[in-house]
Length: 224
Image (tube, rainbow, N blue to C red):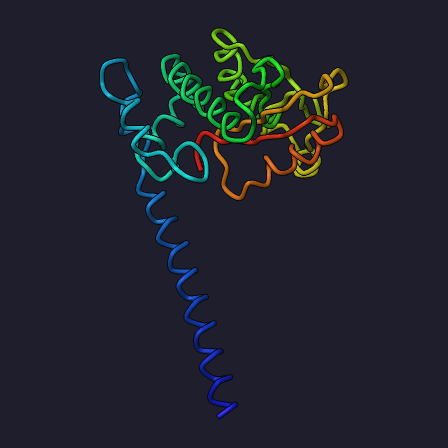
């Protein structure tokens, strides 16, 4: 009887592992089918904001596998489409306010929160000539009561094209706190990124930000 139970347990574990492999394979297949270039960039009056809101996710603001989400990230990240930047920064700002309302007393002064971003790797900036997350960051600054501060940089601060970097330079290009990074007492810190997959980038930045001793750290991604 005991051998039978062990055998059934092994079979159940095997089936569970197969289900995980199948699910991950299905997600990869679904992602591969998406071609952001076939979907035009967002424009005023075409209900893109409603479509994105309908695609809201529990993991971040939106699930990356949804076509319009995937396309919006593409147009802001690689094509620097101005309206897409405005749209996503507006929606991210609303999400941040919601996060604060859920975590803290609503009487908390919004000015006690500092917003920062996960910087693109220096070699990605070198390839494109800009940091897409900084575009969102700068756009939010125009119509917000939050305090905005650049907090993170890289140990290899020099901006180069990825073609000019060795494997060791890529590997050692790690996040670091900027020399002037400082959080006022009793202030909270919001860290945002464009897309999170495993969450490792935001987790690394969260651990790094602990050195600044903020009252609370919240992290959010536009898509997962």
